[in-house]
Image 1 (cartoon, rainbow, N blue to C red):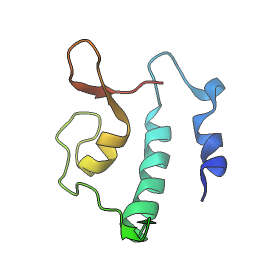
Image 2: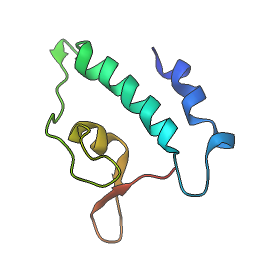
Image 3: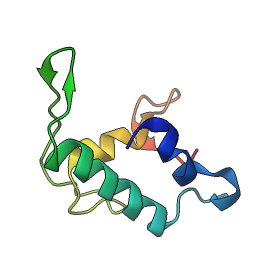
Length: 86
């Protein structure tokens, strides 16, 4: 699946003010598992690796920390990574 095909998962009409729904996170995690864990992703001739430790964050408990990192961003005020609701 390419980025253009993923666009339907990021439809603004499906988003709430609280961010992604559990269903949307579930779908994104499934895509993440397929693209990064099940299949080998090669970038510039090198295998892309990610953090396979399990997350303890309440929104991502049991999921790979690599996925958590992808859906969070650094807060410019306190320099901590926070869930990106956009």
